[in-house]
Image (tube, rainbow, N blue to C red):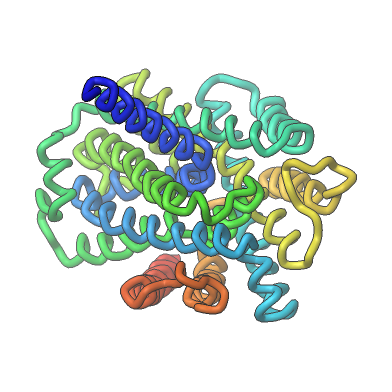
Length: 433
């Protein structure tokens, strides 16, 4: 009798864990993809510049950034799962079309700047890998166009998760750079190992704020909300979705850690840094580490940058298309055909074409273009966080899943800090011009 009872109990426990695992797999995707997409070409450039300029001490903010990213992304996920509405849809309903239009225009222009950076990175990496630039860029744009317009939600999610695997190349690049692992890991606890001059401190604050700003973006908040809604998830999977969201935040900065380590080990110790040689892009980082870390490390860094650029090339215009559809009450889903969601798909395609055309303008400074994009992001971010926090703190809307006092106060304080940090970073960079 006892043997039978024990057998049934163990079987029940096993089935319970199987069911939980199946639920986690079923909700897996939105949180991880939304967070990983923050490591796009612009993100890779920022982390590369941070590592090359400041060395290992810039690793210290990563723990704080990971928490901030997880908390803000979780709010957007929880808001959508409880209300079964996207963030943009709720803003339009609660605050009107004028507010929606204002936020969307800022989001559209900033996103176009980001997409232009992705296209530029793809073009540059093609040269590094000895591939003709024009056909390669056109080919990447066509791939993005075909699987978004001809595929569905499941295909898009699968491909983005596969592309995320290429971030492993940064781990290999870091290892090939022969870093001081004890110093790298120690700087996660407190920043040390350098001489803290006034010039270094100012650079640390400015670049540290840039690292923060490149991870938490306006488009990221809209994307995780819309992508979760398009997946047709609800509050019955809330705790599993929350886990996946925090996992995505951890995974994002896990790879960011290796990007910084690779450039800190290969470049910061070889003449790059405050008062020395300077980087301005991720492509430069891939080329610069070649003499110190070897051909393989350089090529793998470039491959990782290409994966990051392609991720951004898909996710950023997709976030714009989602937001437009929700802001103005139109049909927009990856599981609907072109005819039913025509505006959604056309807006996605137009962004790719416009970004590609911008990169062909003679004499345009893509570095300055990226700075202008950061400025607009800094202007848009306060509004996005204001409405996100206000909606997630609305008891009538959220019921028992409303923000508690800690969540409300913490996210408000974090949001204010992010806004100030972004504004200070942009101002500092503009003054350098």
